Length: 435
Image (cartoon, rainbow, N blue to C red):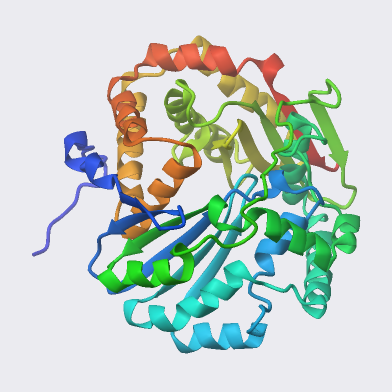
C-alpha cells in the first residue's frame, strides 16, 4: 500500500518503557568447576551456535617486558606442544569454527565460536592453545617483522600517534596505562618473555569462562573434562600488578608533536577520570553523549556540520579496571587547528554555563535507552554485558542504576557534572601535525 510521507516533519520520538528490558534476565547462571574456575551460562538464542570465552587478568598493565603481553596473546595459536600452527588453522577452518584473541590494558581473552556439534572436535585444540603454547622461534621472528612494519607505518599516521601519545601524556610514561610500544621493544621480544608471561597469567586460578548461545548438557561436560577437573598451569604464581597511582612526568598540559609531511592535524583533548564503579559515571555518560557521543552531538553539529572543519569528531569515556579517561578526538586540516580547538572549548564552556534544553536531553536519553536495548539483543551481546560485570566486579544493580539515571537525570545534573570535571585547566591537549 502506497503512502505519501511528509518529510518536512521529523518522525515522532517514542518513549521507551524501561520495565520492558527484563534486566533481571541478564543475570547468568553461575557455577564453579571442580578446580574452582567460575563459569557463566547465557543459554539463549535460536541458532545452534556457541560462543565460549576464556577471560584472564593478563592485560598489558601486567607485563614486565614491554610488548610481551600483546605478543603472548597473538602467538597462542602459532604452535602448541602437539599441534602446529597450520594444523590448528586447518582444523578450525574444517569445522567452521573461529577463534578470536583480544587484549586491553587489564584483560586478555580467547574466544571460540563454533557449532554445537563440532565442539567435541574443536576443544582439544582450544585446550592446547590455552594451556601449552610453545611460541616457536620462527613464528616469533615473522610476527616481530610484521609488527615492526605495521608500527613504522602507523607512526606516520597522525591519528595513531595522537591516540598512543595521549595516554602517555595524561597518565605518565612510567604508568602501566601510559606506556606504549616502540620498535626497539618489539626487537627485544624473545621466546622466554612470552613463556614467562603465559606461565604467570594463563592458569586455572586466573580464569573465568563465559558460555553463551544454545548450551547443551554435553557443552558443560566437555568444558569440565578439558578445563574444569583439575588445576592447570602454574597456579602457585601470584599475579603482581604494577603501581597504578597516576604519576605525571611533567605538568605540561599542552603538547604539539610536529609532523612536517602531515596534511591534517590530529587533536585530542581530555583527562584522567574514574572507572565504571564511580557514582558519577552514568551521569557523565549522558553528558558525553550530548557533547560528542553520537552523530547528532554538539561537537558534530558545530565543527562538522556548521564549520565544515572535519568529517568527524567525537568524545568518549573509557573505563579501565583501576581508572579511566575522557577524550575528545578529531582530525582537521592544519589551517583549521586553532579554530577547531577554540570551538571545542566553547562547547565545553556552554555545558558549564548553560542548561541543556529539555528537548535535547529527552532526545539523548531516548537514544541511550535504544543503545542499551541493542546492547542486550541476543546471547552473545548479553555475554559481553556479563563480561563487563566480571571485569569490573559489578552486579545487575549497576544496570538498573543506569536505567534509573536515564529516567531521572535533569539539566541541572548535567551542568553540575560539567563544572565538576570539564574545567579547562583540568584538561590535557595534544595535537599531532604540521604547525
